[in-house]
Amino acid sequence: SFGVKSIKLKGRMSFWMHPLSTEMPCFDAIQYAFVNPPDIELDFTGLANIADMQLLDVKGMVRNIMQDVISGMVVLPQKMMYQMNPATDFCDIYIPSFIGLARIRAHSGRGFQVEKQTFGHDVPDVYLNISLGSQAPWKTSTV
Image 1 (cartoon, rainbow, N blue to C red):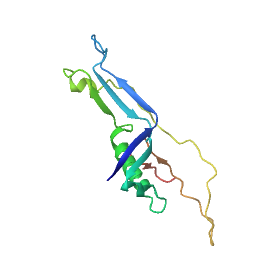
Image 2 (cartoon, rainbow, N blue to C red):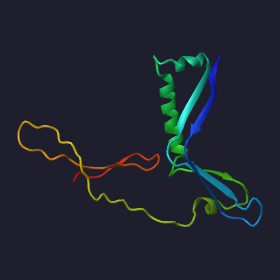
Image 3 (cartoon, helix red, strand yellow):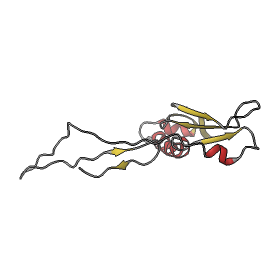
């Protein structure tokens, strides 16, 4: 036989409890998500212990696949939801009031390395890779 004995997720998690209710438990739904992708620890059993061998790094491949799946489901901006009150309107849970907007602007940079050129003087193509949660990194235009 083979299998997974335990899976541990370590990371910072946020909880949103809304909409508020006049009855216990005081809110109708809970939304939850990891702020950043969590660290994953796997413990295999039986024949699957082969994955623990350093030679093949099957454990690393399984961990990377799980990391991608978890990031796509429960790392911000994605959230999971548990509905406490079945009578709650779906729109009240998933469409909360707008809180705000963040605008990111790069002001300056320093310490860029220029590759050695045989002829002439080359200026490096400077750009930013920006990522938020589990979304794919966004690359700015070169300056």
